[in-house]
Length: 129
Image (cartoon, one colour):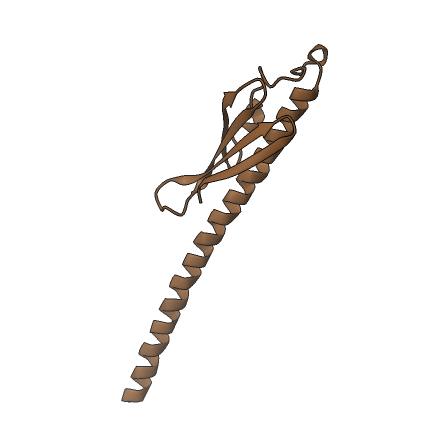
């Protein structure tokens, strides 16, 4: 083989290697974002259930204008997207926390999202992008 052919082969291998590394990085970033979005969607669903409980009269199994007594339903506390808890349940607010399956931007801890639910409002905060 000529020197020019060897140079082209080496150049081709370098370009393919760079393309593979870039592809892996894009895939990792995409899967983290998808997990974050899925956690927010699941938490929004749980927030809706908490607000339903708040508005439902106690005679019908609700809270009667209080969140006290509301819990994350057992069938929704763990999904394919992550694990969900309600560490703080107060009379007029509930704090929900979702911990994802993907590693966040810090590279060591999983994606986490916190959501504060009040009777008329839902506020979401990403803890580890």
